[in-house]
Length: 191
Image 1 (spheres, rainbow, N blue to C red):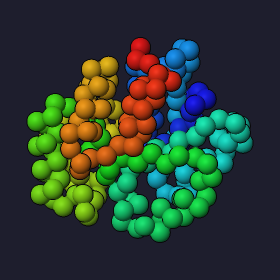
Image 2 (spheres, rainbow, N blue to C red):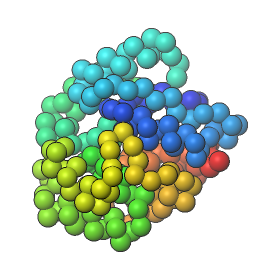
Image 3 (tube, helix red, strand yellow):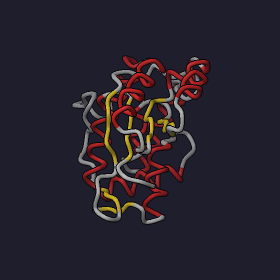
């Protein structure tokens, strides 16, 4: 893998996560792993527009697209449209919302509690809309604000997230799985 990886992000929360991730990992030769860019929304039109603009400036750079799965599960034609136009960029989905993936970094018991709340609201089969979802999430993190993690991202939190991904099947985060694979192959390392 050539670094850095251009990472087109759905929104500011994802950009912030990528920037924080860059603080705890680096390429094996010390380079930054990700260069995040905000598409200001997850629609295929916004993603592809940002992708084209950034690719014009960085033609040879590997590209990942970091999105929430919620809008794509509500309308599969959107995913088809994105698949058609993304070129060789790799789609990296969080299932369903960014806040769900935040919970992967929490202790397993707290994650399972969150998963049960989501199941009680049928979130994994019919994703909750942002207002309802955030209301439930703020019961766990009352001071949470979009664009910010409710905790410091550390090596131990990242390692916990890797472990939690393997211990359950409801919340998926392909970007985190890809990061773990790069760590396993020693293409990237923890700082």
